[in-house]
Each structure stands twice: as C-alpha cells, then as structure tokens.
Image (cartoon, rainbow, N blue to C red; front, side, top):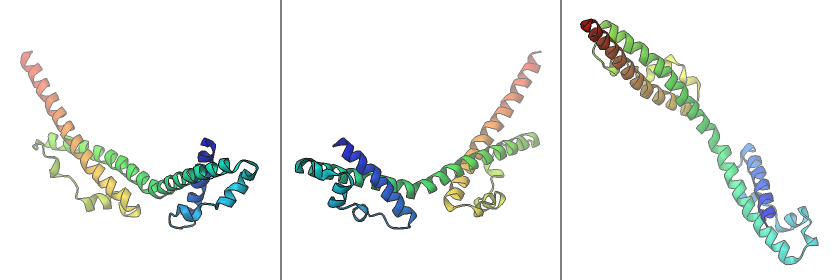
Length: 174
C-alpha cells in the first residue's frame, strides 16, 4: 500500500505541474485518473479485488497530496525566491550606504542620526532601478535596505566614536 501512495504522489506531482504550466487552475479531482485507468496502469486486475480496491484508495490519497503540494510549490516558489533575493540585495546595498554615511557624518562632526540621509522609498527604487523587477523583489529590497542601513549606520558611528574615545584615553594616559 505504501507503494500505491508513493506512485499516486508521483503522478499527482506530474499532473500538478502539467496543469500549472498549461495555466489551468488547481483541481486534483479533475486531474485524477479514473479507477479503471489506475487499475490498467498497474495491471491490478491480476490481483484480488480487495488488493485492487486498497491500492486504488491509497493511490488516490497520494495523488491528492502530491498534486496539492506540487501545485502550491509551483505557484508560490517564484515570488518567495524573488522576495528572498530582494531582501538579500537590499541588505547589501543598505549596509554599504549606511557605513558610508555614518563615516561621513562622524568625520563632519554631525550627531548620530541615521534618518538624516536615509533615502525615501521612491529614491531607493529609482537609484537601484527596482521598477524593472517584480513587486515582491522591490518591496523586499526596500525593506531590507532600510533595516540594514539603520543597523550598519548606528554600528559604524558607534564604533568610530568608541575608537576615537579609546585613542583619546590612551594619549591622555601617556
């Protein structure tokens, strides 16, 4: 019976991908082969009726699971991957800019204020040409950028201040 379920899952996954790429809605029941087709596919008429019935029931349960899982995966993977990549890319860009602006502010004698030069969302979109990507990528990039910019700006500014304070303390002691 475990084989029947595995075979059903496998065929369900294949049917889901076929429906997805043919731009059909998810409908495992419509894609499910008939009992007779399942029986012929696996030559089940050579087995006892109870085995055949049990096999078909397990096959159908596996088919439904495999179909639904695979269709959802095909539907949701591209936006999730886009969001993940956008977040990573935004964090990298925010980190670079946050460090640069913290150093500049510190050298100019400005107080620590990450919001002073934090770009507006529309400026981030324009600067990194995010309008060319998906909405998921754009939104994740902007959020990742702003969060990492703040973190890196504050860490860099504090580190520069601490280094200068330690240097001043050492020169006073000497």
